[in-house]
Image (cartoon, rainbow, N blue to C red; front, side):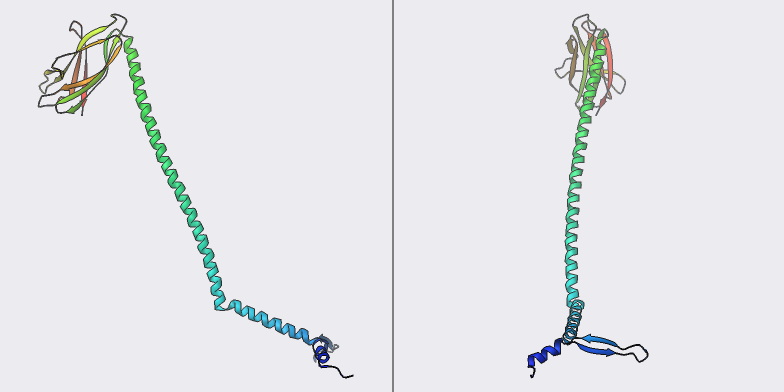
Length: 239
């Protein structure tokens, strides 16, 4: 019975073919290799596809695409690092602001402490003066307001238990360039400032100045109720 065309084609592709391999330099038996034409054709086809794929990968267009992907990844990483740097800079700026704020706060606390310490020292000196009999002048200070006036301040303290009330007056004077004591009048024209205290009194005021020269120091003289001098204090006049 004659075979059809399909059978002949099937036999050609799938029936194995025997290939005998001999080696003229060897006395060993010949080797036999069975190959199906279909398998050989598939192998050749797959090898061609592999070579084509390798050529496409190594082609300039594919390399350019790979570079673009790498550049995109690097740009993304750069943007991430720049955001991180900006965040750190913001944190450092905030830290610097907090440090400056803390410095200002510490400076203010130091100033408050200094003022409190001055007040404590003043009240301690007042308590010490209260233990000693008589009238005492503490914390005396003077400074020049302008060419026509001088400001002064001090604390007047009465020490001891008797008399109950200290009464008297205070005179102000300055030494001229000729070393002559010049009495300074009060703004109301009086020559002396009266005082009356049972414990301590904070005193401050201004003295008019009409001389052409400027005094370097202010002399404060304490007088009792009889006009007797009981104490003198001389302070530098600061500008």
